[in-house]
Length: 316
Ligand code: ADP
Image (cartoon, rainbow, N blue to C red; front, side, top):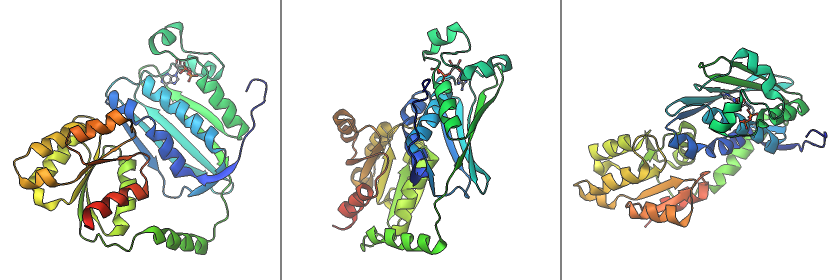
């Protein structure tokens, strides 16, 4: 980067999908630190944009990584995306945390290479002091900007803006695409089947709901394991299948599955419970099965994996 050898690689991609993938990587660390991570996207953000997907994701990764790192356990981190101008389309991304913050006098220097607030930072938190310098360079190449709003002990907000190209997409094109994508909705009818969805991250719930609701399924959301157990046990007969996230603050998915299986009701023993987790190592899957779950789908969530389980359990 210092030698100005960095070149952008522009492609057309789905902004929200890139954001989802980037955020998902932090799910585990956020859960470990019992932090909450929320993502808010204004509805007028274009579906597809033209930019350097990988580099944009790298900037968000740097900012999110810092937010998680410099925010104590139990704190919160929020990402908010909005459109600042229409044409050219400028997006603004804010990463807000409730962490240790940065004194105004220190802020400008942080975008220089190898700069950290003070020497104790690298001993306590690790890191190289390169992330922000790299992020700034990338954004400048994209004609974007980055700034900080923060003070010691007050948390930090990193705000960056980038102009992006939006591929011309006439409304008719969108309609055709929507129709086409409904082609892979199976003719199978799942109408009226009731799903309990235990997942703490709102954007992940939205993805599953976006996949399931066009198939006629009814979905009840539970934001953690305890709520899932309570919702199930209030009326065990009501549920046809449970999708269970593993890493949730409070009660995790393993424990929630165990508690449901241990309930004194016949349905508690038979209701299919499918784990949803980004960790798909053999041990993780075995742990899910050992906790009484019936299967596992990976994250990012894949349409065919989800519908595969629906077919398996509902079309027998
Ligand atoms: P690194 O995180 O590897 O040290 P960065 O360039 O990403 O390098 O960050 C430089 C420094 O800026 C950090 O060491 C830290 O002192 C400060 N910093 C960055 N983000 C935050 C944040 N969200 N809250 C508090 N301090 C931060």
